[in-house]
Amino acid sequence: MTVSLTNTSGRCLVFVLAHEAYCQALGECRCEVEQGRCARRTAKSLTLASGLTSPALDDAVLTIPEVVRAVTRGDLSVKRHVPERPLPAVVATKAPTTTSLAEVIRPDV
Image (cartoon, rainbow, N blue to C red; front, side, top):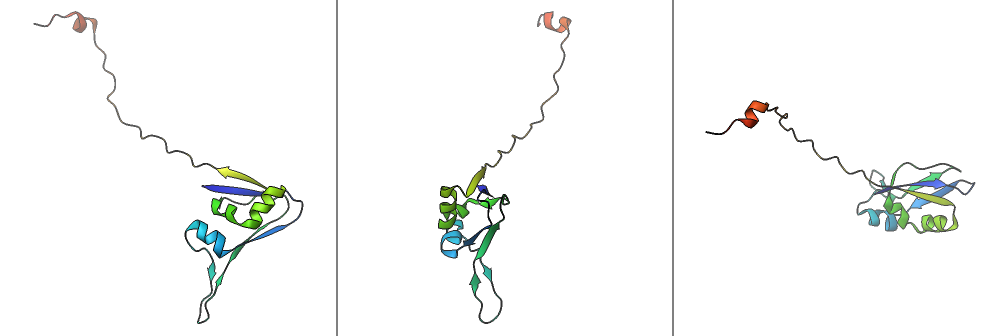
């Protein structure tokens, strides 16, 4: 499931999406990995200007302690995006047939 976060604090907010919390909650690593001999993993961050709503984020962002505190303080509002159910497949059916009165009244022999 995904969520959108809206900054209601009146100031810019920055959250570090720490590997220990965010990537473990996701079940996969989303850190930036530098190339080269001394490759290091760098955590991503989320910056929200005042009044800005984030694009859809994984709900794992709600495991970040700073995000939880901001929601509790009222600095962030959370909107959950519920996935839509797929519509059932339309099955082709035969067109209805018309029956004449003579066919209905006719006795079977």
